Length: 174
Ligand SMILES: C[S@@+](CC[C@H](N)C(=O)[O-])C[C@H]1O[C@@H](n2cnc3c(N)ncnc32)[C@H](O)[C@@H]1O
Image 1 (cartoon, rainbow, N blue to C red):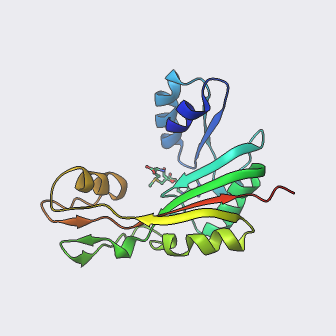
Image 2: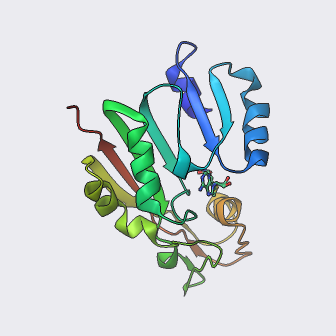
Image 3: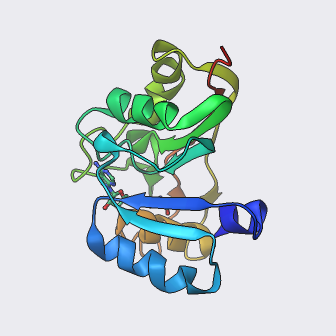
């Protein structure tokens, strides 16, 4: 929805998820944004009706079998000179009450740590990359956010969120 706000009424946002339930959720919220098209598709098979300016993912590559393949598919969906932005965590560097955070359901829980090299290895030109990790002393927005994205409830314990690595990279123009 944030991307739809940026593109405005003349742009288009393709919201891709392999889970049809996620598609339905996006479609319901997107009812107010006619430029958002929710599509059920595996990222490994990403195929859009047109080349896009930007492909964005967050908390996706940690779940897929082959993160490099999915990043390459995203790059392939972008026009020459367009952008790929990915945000993925280094899960084990997070802390709950000082103890390392673990997310056994993720295939690649620390994929954020190799995100810059994944982008380079598939031929993207990295314009910027950074990591950020908000922390909190107990209940509040940081703990709520952790529970929202990982389904792990830290209760009253202090939290250092798993660093989220962002890579902003360009598809070569020619
Ligand atoms: C943690 S959620 C993403 C959360 C959201 N991007 C955010 O930042 O709040 C991960 C999503 O990736 C989807 N997913 C997992 N594997 C996928 C794949 N191979 N292709 C497309 N979507 C996939 C899941 O269905 C799920 O909706």
